[in-house]
Length: 461
Length: 109
Image 1 (cartoon, rainbow over the protein chains, first blue to last red):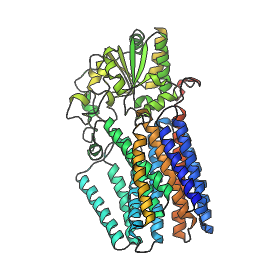
Image 2 (image 1 turned 135 degrees about the vertical axis):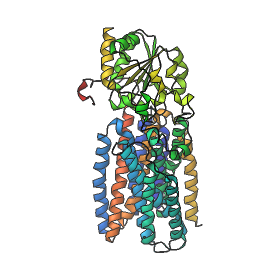
Image 3 (image 1 turned 180 degrees about the vertical axis):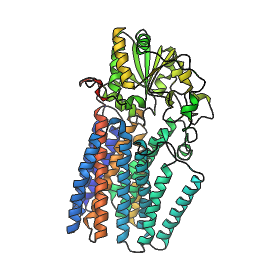
Image 4 (image 1 turned 30 degrees about the vertical axis):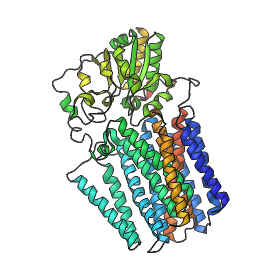
């Protein structure tokens, strides 16, 4: 590696770090991403002097880029904001796949007894990269509703996964210590893919974002390992940055749900209850439902309203309508704030992105810790398409799968208005006793429709 | 351990600490964009993909190189574009148009 290339890689690494730092503040976040992109371009250009193209090599490089650019750009442009989590999963998965393929390709060149310094990171990259690839595809399929989003479990699942993992370790050890041939590392690749699928299948419900974040960190590590294989500093630095920050992000996300990472990954969250809760919950309890006019009057004559948005709002594309309702109420002197649960929507920050799209000012968006004490003095908590994040079972029922998750104290408000499509349970698949609370009024229907009706009714009130 | 490997290992360990340090200051609202942004950064695997694709000789290497370049390009381009799209919305005060697409033509079931 020449000095110029090494310095260019250093510059790229510095830009990645600066980019990540700028991503830490809403004001500079967009520039941060652009700075990182500039770093990427520099790293790619700096690589050119290292290349000794064969005739086939230059063709596949150009063809590959020409195929990949439109797929990535169009996919990213077309995706709806509500589908962002699965798109991130998909982009992450292909990165993991690329890392595994790079390692396989390099290992093929190394003969049957590669040095440990090559063999170990290669094996790591192959296994982790293929786990990330297959796991991300399953996460994508689950979130895109191509398959059931609920956990898929069967007896002895943990044992099967354990055996898979052991088989991988055994094969990897054999490859490193005895012989590295395609007969060994192709099965290793396949076992990695199988483990990726097996690992994500039992995870579902509200836990998917945590898994995607972890797979993102995995891909980072696989990329770093590929960097060791190729002796390339840019890959090592960038991959490791992502591996480390992704691991911490994963921990922050599971903390936000009040659960340990181990519990998220191996707890088969809500598996038993998901199927029956919808039916069982409706029995023997009565629900109060109101007309848009009743609720509009209640809202219009309140002093303070806290809006609790959830995934239902996103699905209905109702973020603009909710902003309009808030504007209408503010015109009448009602104080309006938004309470954003850390895992509202399907990923931390997802709801903020959607509300920002509707031009809701930041200072009205309150994080859970900032606003939880304010519900006591609030006239109406307006829950729009959220459910699990206000479920008091998280506080009171030790048996509940969400027990221990911090929730928004919507139940402390003087009135609670629930806008929901039906009595069906939320993402976690568990019933919500708050729906049956005497202080609660339901407004059934599509969130956007209902909001539009409320806006009209508030104007008339 | 060769000197080169030792250097690589040093960088690796230091990068771990920077990775932790950089992210520990990020507010919750930026977690999704951050995940997406880091996702784009590991698209650096495109450098690795091009390195192996460039020297491909036999059909197997050609196939592997092509697959690696395509996958890595999707990762890097898609990653940065989708992150930019998310962050585009984090404009400060109401500078742009407020909600214009309110007509309920797109009611989902």
